[in-house]
Image (cartoon, rainbow, N blue to C red; front, side, top):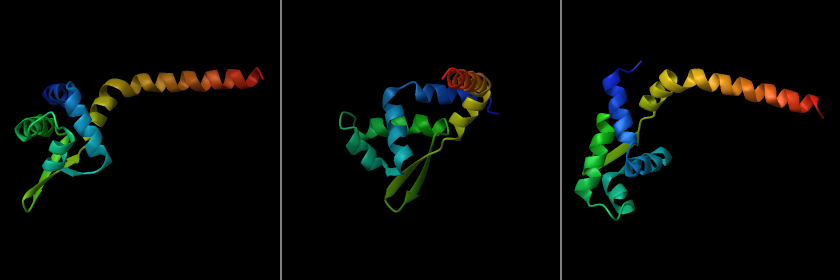
Length: 109
């Protein structure tokens, strides 16, 4: 289980819509920093790098250098840890409720 400081960094990283949009792109496939900069035309390269730094600090992005390019990969593990700690026990109840509702509806047909 992640510590409170790790959780804080993840929540901070996810708190900005541009960083969430970057993660959405990286979820599809790894991208270079240049590709991300092209996608966010309203941001300069330095600002994109700052956002990537926040995502890296939170462990949500893993960067690898290949030649002149920096490739950015999405790492879903920190989000999974938050899910396991904060959401999963409540989701189980909701799934059970939906199963009972489905069963009740099928019986009423």
